[in-house]
Image (cartoon, rainbow, N blue to C red; front, side, top):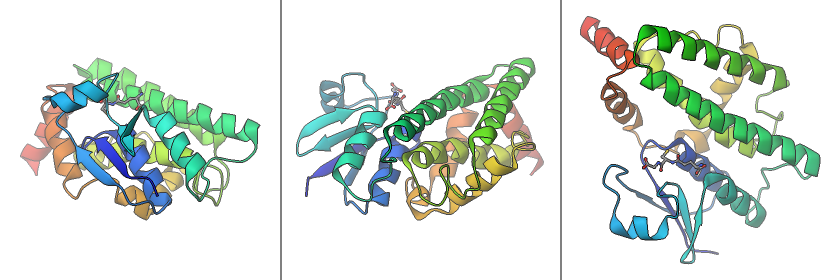
Length: 225
Ligand SMILES: N[C@@H](CCC(=O)N[C@@H](CS)C(=O)NCC(=O)O)C(=O)O
């Protein structure tokens, strides 16, 4: 049994992918959350890209969430990637789509004004419509079995739980399959346990501090509450 340490950050969606994967495999691990605004020297020394997540495996360091999750999938059961190579490549492609969607979410919460917010919101709505076309009967991306694509999208959907406390971003109105998938992921134990109990409050503080259009919507909603 390898000694595993996940070097992470409280809010990082990429680190959540690794935490979810470890949990789906019932693999015990230590989690070390660092402050990305004040990175410890030991972290700078072992992180080639200066990013979390890192996975320390018996003292060796893996970086980047995709190879981390692939390594875990190749060494621990149950296997979460499909056995068929073509299907596996498709899953990896949708995981890349999840990463691009995370970038688009960053664009949304950093939008400086209403016009930028609206155009980034419309871009995201288009991405979820594209995703809708890729989904089957559920409850998960590839049907009954939870996969690494599910581990990649659960942190994507988690952002909206916080956004929707303050404003209706109306992103899922025309995507019933995505809505059902989001609900199924939110109920999954591995997904729930991938963040701390204070995640929502931490994310709220992070978003308010962006000084963006969303920060203003959140401040207005809080003032009305
Ligand atoms: N492609 C990387 C992305 C990881 C990433 O962007 N991590 C962010 C936190 S969520 C980070 O560490 N950023 C460095 C910083 O903020 O300085 C992966 O899949 O692991």
